[in-house]
Each structure stands twice: as C-alpha cells, then as structure tokens.
Image (spheres, one colour):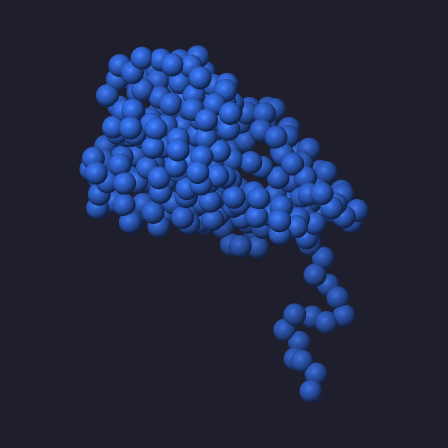
Length: 286
C-alpha cells in the first residue's frame, strides 16, 4: 500500500479508484485540495497522488474494516464518492436471477454498505457530501442493458430517499448520471444466451462500445464531482454530457410513445410488432 503524508483537512474516499471515473475523480479531488483515499479490491492501482486502500464493496467485513481504519487514522470523512460498479449486456429473459443479484450486489448494495458505514462519522461531525455515480441507464431502461439499468434506477431511488433522510444532519447526497465516456468499462454477458436475441443484443453492445470508444474524456465527470464536493448546497441530479442532458429533457416533455421510438431509433432496433390475433382492449370471451 502506498503511504502518503496527510496534509489537508478535507478528506475524501473514492471507491473503485483503480481505473475509469474513479481514478480521474481521485486525481481531481487531490488536485483541488482534498486528502484522497481510493479503493480497489486488492488496494492496488490508482493514481500516484492517492493512497489506495483494500475494499470489496460486496463484503460487509471488508467495508467495515476499511472504513474503521480510515476513521481511526484521520478522525473524519468529508466526501464519499460511491463509484465502484459493474456492467452487463444481455436480454432480460436470458439473465438469471443469480446474475442479476450479483450485479445489484455491487451497484446497489455495495453503495448502501459503504454509505451506512460512513454516515455515523458524518453525522457526528455535522457535515458531509455523498456522491453516487449512476448512469444514463438510470434515466431510461436501455434495451439489452436491462438489469444494469434496473440497478441504476434502484440507485437513483435510494439516493433520492437518502438525500431527504440525512439533510437534517448537514449531509448532502447527489447523483451523477453520465453518458458513455472513454472509461474502458468491461461488460459481462449472461452465461445462458438465447439465439433469438443475438441480433438485438449484439447490435446494442456494438453501439454502446462505440459510444464508449468515441466518448468524451472522463475528466468531465471528475470535474462535476469535484464541484459537488466543493459546493455549499449541491443539487441532487447531475447529468454529464449532451446526451444525458437531452435525455432528462426528452423524458420529461415527450409523449411516452414518441420517447420510446427515439430510444429504439438510437439503438437501431426494429419497430415493435404488437399485431396479433387478439387486439388489446378486445372484450374477453364469456
């Protein structure tokens, strides 16, 4: 473990800081004056300016041990960035309950574990910033990204409720929802894949990977998080990127059927086929 001298008074913890959004966010927070601790499962990796700690967000004991040692060492925590997460591409039908549960374990329950571990300290000091890293998939259910989108929708609901609950203690909660950026995030697939979904799944995965490869630098997300960490009264939801901003707007103002058609067009999916022998609304037979 890299041991760096602690010279600043504001302390930040960034989970999943060995790569992607977490790495550049840890760097940015250090640049603007925070003493930053990053985490990875092994405690390895991360930026050279940041001390890395071992933390597995899926494991209760690992979370408790890491947070306890950090608080014992410095006595406070001003900013928590819940960034650790996983992605999966696959049809909802072909994703098993066990695979969905594993994704939620990291993307939702991992956030809850770390947050619950730091809240007593933030309450005692009467201040704190919690920043949860969501996704554009938390704004709309992206086809063939359904279980991942479900986890990010769950994160959004949890974050919004938490914001209300901890506000009386001087703690703010914000949700950052980026469009695809150049992070190189890995996307797993379900173990049991159904041939009838191959065309749709493969096509959507290719589009998403292309968006990641051509996306903006993750520094934009890091800068947004740094602003939240340094702002007296940060707002709740922060879309990062033009597509995220447009999606917020479109979801709010467009008729549902038109919004749905735009999503399908963006992902090059064929129009829905709802025609059949029985029309929706026909009376049931007696």
